[in-house]
Amino acid sequence: MTAMPPLTEKAFMAQVLELAKLRGWRVFHPFLSKWSEKGWPDLILARPPRLLAIELKTDKGKLTPEQEVWLWTLRDCGIDADCWRPRDWDNIVEALH
Image (cartoon, rainbow, N blue to C red; front, side):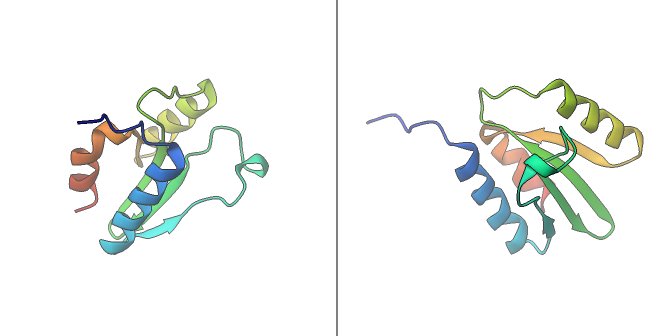
């Protein structure tokens, strides 16, 4: 059996967006992040009463210092902010239940 190639961030984003929309979440993803605040999370997901701020990375991808600061700042504001990776799929499915 041949090993599956690593999932790209773009493909992973498509999977997360599909699941979120199927589960009734409202989704915001900046069209071009180059004009956004450096480090702002990839996704804002909302389904009352919950709001999630999510940075997506490949399994080997690393958060930039700016991304880490944004995630901590949002957490300090009471927002559920996290970094999701393809290896976290079971937890992602649970988070979007």
